[in-house]
Amino acid sequence: MAEKKKTRVVILGAAGRDFHNFNTFFRDNPDYEVVAFTATQIPDIEGRVYPPELAGELYPEGIPILSEDDLEKIIKEKNVDVAVFAYSDVSHEYVMHLASRVHAAGADFWLLGPESTMIKSTKPVIAVTAVRTGSGKSQTSRKVVQILQEMGYRVVAIRHPMPYGDLRKQVVQRFATYEDLDKHECTIEEREEYEPYIDRGLVVYAGVDYEKILREAEKEADIILWDGGNNDFPFYKPDLWIVVVDPHRPGHELKYHPGETNFRAADVIIINKMETASPEGIQKVRESIEKANPNAIVIEGASPIFVDNPELIKGKRVLVVEDGPTLTHGGMTYGAGYVAAKKFGAAEIIDPRPYAVGSIIDTYKKYSHLSNILPAMGYGEKQIKELEETINKADADVVIMGTPIDLRRVMKLNKPSVRVRYELEEIGQPKLKDVLKEFVEKHVKKE
Image 1 (cartoon, one colour):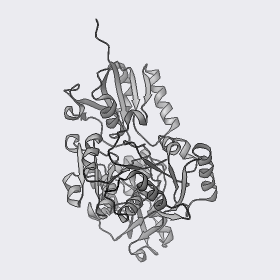
Image 2 (cartoon, one colour; image 1 turned 30 degrees about the vertical axis):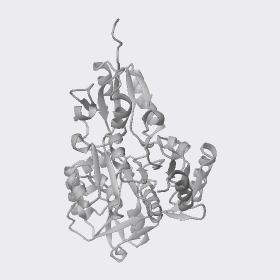
Image 3 (cartoon, rainbow, N blue to C red; image 1 turned 120 degrees about the vertical axis):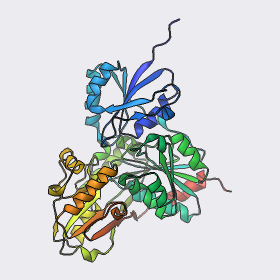
Image 4 (cartoon, rainbow, N blue to C red; image 1 turned 60 degrees about the vertical axis):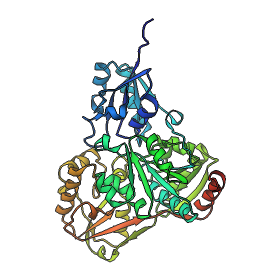
């Protein structure tokens, strides 16, 4: 009897969901052969190999990671049967253009859903995700943690993957101190997500193999908090699913993948940034909720900003540095730093583009909607240095950092700087505390 032909697969990714889909669905599945990953969104992540230590017994030489630009060539040369889409924060139109490329090259196009990829925890799981990058997941996650800590529960956060370095060293990463960030050679993007938890005395896990990560985290937690990345849906099966929407981008909750999945599946929807959004934007989001998920609990929220030394801003020429992913594939043209510059009376927000160097120049070319804001790109040591050089070259009096971390921890700046922070502030009723109180009564076992 002839041996059954394996289905040949390429997984289209960006060093996150792609590896998770492989680990949970394909790794030990003899019916499939994953011949390659492709990579996009993140600079310099192609040209690597998903190592055999992670790929498992069926892949003794590992799996090559190639550029998505060569997709048609890969499908043809490697006789690919199926292309699996596995990254996030892209428009539905973008997904279907990619599907058309795959179909024209002769392969099937797949999207793996939650049931195929979610892992079940032995502990209660709260997931915080969003409809777009930059909606306010981070401050929502911090608020959830704060409330649960005040109730006396041990919470361990697990963050969506950002494994841009040596994958062999990033299988399971545990962060409890700033020394851990240095030990794991964290990028700016990673530090932005991990530092706020460390500042609150919390442990946060991340890495590549999210089954192993979960089993380690369960050992020291009463409750697991899944802190999502981009607008991806959770890697773990949530017992409570909180989704943040952004009325500054009304309608995006139904136009982006997989943010619409989150939006339709949410138990709780938080309409964030209401203090700065237009009434029309807020109304459009409300109409989307009524149409797509009318049974969700809706919480209204604001993201007020707090600035260290705001007097340094008044009357000055300022360089505004914002969170990188929010401005790039998140599509925003400004963030909290820009709001602070306007609020505290900056004389001028300078255009950083004439001072950009290296990959920062490439970022402005790729994301042409950006003008007088500098995205804090920092996907590796070289790019952090290029960001530092760009900031230091800029002809400004003061640097306003709208980034979730203090950039002065990872670079030396040659001019005064101020830090902008933002937290979730709920408006009216219901409140997160009420929702979480009901959650723990139902899901957390009494000791």
